[in-house]
Image 1 (tube, rainbow, N blue to C red):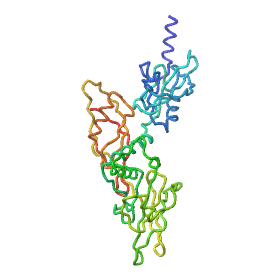
Image 2 (image 1 turned 180 degrees about the horizontal axis):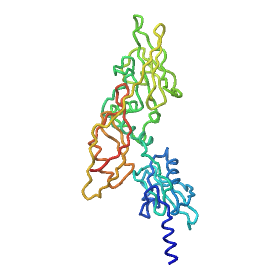
Image 3 (image 1 turned 60 degrees about the vertical axis):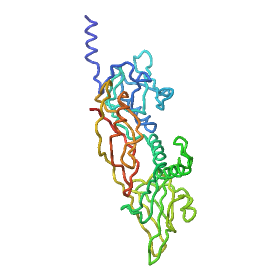
Image 4 (image 1 turned 120 degrees about the horizontal axis):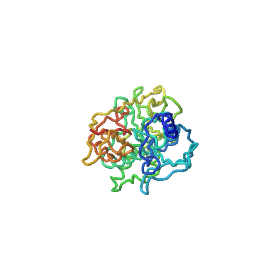
Length: 369
C-alpha cells in the first residue's frame, strides 16, 4: 500500500513536457532514427545545442552532454550524424543520442525517457548554402550546355544600354556552352578550379557625351551597407576583356571588373566613371522577389502509409520557373520520392535582377492530400 502511494505521488509530481515525447525507444538512440534538427553544416552546432538544452531527465533533471564526434549515416550516405553522450543525476550509465543536422522534421520530439523543459524553438531551416551551391553548379552545367543564357542588364529596364553583368551561374553556364561546342562536357563533380570560385563580372559600355563616345575609366560595385566586395584584379578592357569573355559581342571601349561574390547583393549599386565632362553614372541593381505560382498537393502512392506531416525538400527555381535539383531534407522518408515527383508539377516565379531571372534556392514543405 505504501509502495503504491509512493508510485502515485511520483506519477503526480512528474513534470509535464513542453514537447512531444517519442514512444519509440529507437528514436534518437540509433543512427537509423536520429533526431532531425536541420540547419546543415553551417548551423549544426547551434541547432543541436538548442535541442539538447531543452531536454531534461524524466523527473526534470538537468542534462550534461558532450559531443563524441561525427559519423556517416551509412556507407553510401552523404548525411553526417553527430553523436552525443548524455547523462543526468541518477542515470545508471550515459545515454547516446544521434542528431542529424542535414534533415529537419516539423514534428520534433524528445527521446523516450526524456522530457522538455521548454519548447525546442527550432524553426524550419532555410536552404543549406553548400547543397544550394552544388545544385547551382549542376544546373548551370546542365542548362548551359544546351542553350544560351542571356546576361543581366545593368539597366533596371532590362535594356542593357549601359552594360551587362554575369553572375557565377551565368559564367559557369557559358563555360559549359563552350565545352559543348567543342564536343566535350564539364564534369559537375570536378569542374575547372577557376570556375569553382564565386565571381561576378560587370561590364560597362561607352556612353554618348558631348557629341562623341566616351569610354568608361572605372567601374565600382558600391554596397548598400557593409564593406565593399573584394575585386578580383584590375578592371579589364580591349583584348584582355575579350579573352575573359570570349564570343561576346562587346562594344569598343567597354570596361569590365571582376568581384569575388556569387551575385550582387540587395542594395548594391554600380558606379561607372567617365572622363570629364561626362562624370559618373550610378546604376541601381533592382531585385524582384520570387513567388509560388502553382503548388498542387501531392498524392500518397498506393500502399504507402499517409502522414499529416509534410516532406521537406530543398530545390532550385530555375530561370524558367520550374523546380529543379530537388533533394529530400526531412519529414516522412517513405513519402520523399512522391514529394520530389510532385514538384515536377509546381511552377514559380524566380527572383529577378533588373528583370533577368536568377536561379533561386528554396526549401518547400510538400503536403499530401
